[in-house]
Amino acid sequence: MKKIGFLTFGHWTPSAQSATRSAADALLQSIDLAVAAEELGADGAYFRVHHFARQLSSPFPLLAAIGAKTRNIEIGTGVIDMRYENPLYMAEDAGAADLISGGRLQLGISRGSPEQVVDGWRYFGYQPAEGESEADMARHRTETLLEILKGEGFATPNPQPMFPNPPGLLRLEPYSAGLRERIWWGAGSNATAVWAAKLGMNLQSSTLKDDETGEPFHIQQAQQIRAYRAAWEEAGHQRTPRVSVSRSIFALMDDRDRAYFGSSRNDQDKVGFLDEKTRAVFGRSYAAEPEKLVEMLKQDEAIAEADTLLLTVPNQLGVDYNVHVIESIIKHVAPAMGWRD
Image (cartoon, rainbow, N blue to C red; front, side):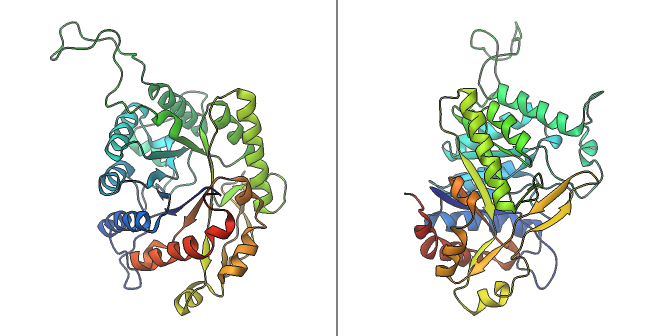
């Protein structure tokens, strides 16, 4: 495990029990948590994107703000639903956020998961082409985004422009060199992981995936990662790909930790259905004293296969508590797991 970061969904609710009671709270606290995580030495600050929900939904203003307030930490998403995206506009937003951060953007994208509303992308003005599924639509938009991020000109310039143009066809601006190699695909199945490898995207694998063999989650996820790496090698890409996995991990350091997570009911995998056709396996959470936690995590085959671990954090418990959660793992667990070796 070379890198460790956090992943938050940015939940908020106007409840007295929540420390994150508004959209403004979720956004501003996300910035504060990223700044604090950098001070702790964490490698990454990642944010989930959901539409029509009391969660984070418009990532690029947030990513740009964090990029302006930090200097070293990677800033990413996990993931942006490409069914909702215009890939050209997205390339401009992503290029701007990456330049503001000095090239630290790690952009996780995917075909998305079940949302809060039925076919929510239709309200954004999108629909699949004839004979195309919504998953096809997401993948085709991804292919367009990847092509644009190469930075090659494709648009015919106006012969009488308002401002002088460089010679040749024009590309979108701002262009950020290197961003194309920092695009990650959130794969729910082995097949989409292989597809991502062929296109030269890094791999994000979360706390759930399609249940393809009936084996424990971490074993299936490790198999997915191996299939991805094999496909990457077969494709002949010249660089080494990156792979992240997400986990809910809590070191029980004090009474607060034990009260919140000491009697966790999520210490076993769960099986459910994402829709009427897709059976999925949901990975377990980990909560224990540090020494025991290390031994438990060393048995997780997917963590061993990945180079980056993203800690899912309970953002509604507030910035201070989440800093404590991240610090506990970084100081008392990560070193024994080979962090930065």
